[in-house]
Image 1 (cartoon, rainbow, N blue to C red):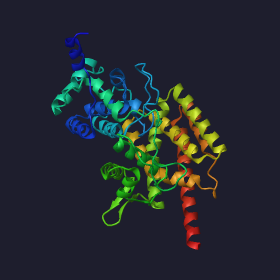
Image 2 (cartoon, rainbow, N blue to C red; image 1 turned 90 degrees about the vertical axis):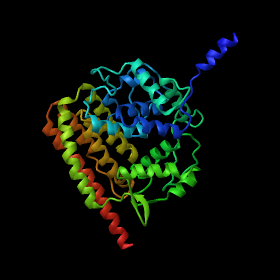
Image 3 (cartoon, helix red, strand yellow; image 1 turned 180 degrees about the horizontal axis):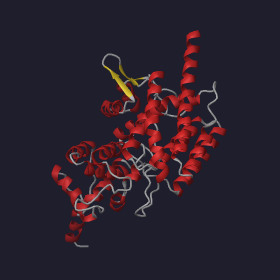
Image 4 (tube, rainbow, N blue to C red; image 1 turned 45 degrees about the horizontal axis):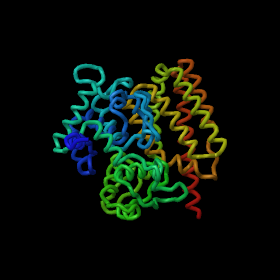
Length: 400
């Protein structure tokens, strides 16, 4: 090989975005266009090919929470680990839904000249333009974005796919040390999951300095995560008392139920006419998972299967913005369901599986009123159970 050939090969070497400061600079620069920001966040948080990204549709991301798998049915690329929703991607997608009000089956990244998908050459020029805007050298379109994922987000083979800073067997928010370049994303995702599943309990105080010390990181990513979680109404910041997990009263739970009945029944009725055979099969499969988890008294699996069942139903309405609103309400109430369904004093309702089956049968009959009837009974009964347990616990605490 000649020296000239060797030099040309070195010139073509592609580099990743080196650090979080450069990534944040790019996000601020791109952020004026929410479609482009979503493309950027998806690329560096998933590592999938450009062809797969450009083939994504709204319903591929709708209803997917941070840390949950994004279905990739296009492009043929295989992954050793599931492709999951990152926190920045989730945030960008919610903004995308609000600004664009897209149809469920619509492409995420349309060409500006029509309704077709953004062409790969155009997308590559777009990405290269981002790098030029902020003065990043030796970057090469989508390949640099994939290398950025490999550097900052790709799971370590030795560490496994998911590193939890909230061990299932330990209460509170005692944390393991984090050794990763994806600190901001990991802290946010783990804090959110810990709150929604009541690993961090309602009313519990969070101290950024303590968390940062336990994780072996600076306070900046912890404070950023706390800010995002406050915006989602999962945390509340008191000027004098600090930050704590949002503590719901019985009154607030009833208010959430009232709002849920308004929007979830509407979504279910609409989904009745939109659902297809494969949706019914998936609902039936999830309900069987739910019933099996009940038989084993596995509270976490009960709640996980229940959530998947309901969101599969609502997703059928093809209304992404409505789905996002439902998700926000579920996240706020979720800690109470996890706490109350884990306790062993009171038996949880065993009628959920029956209600679910009645919903499936009503959808098969194309009967939205029956769907609405059984869904309402399901939502009301589960909320009443949670409130009943709360009252009993408070009564016991007063007597002791």
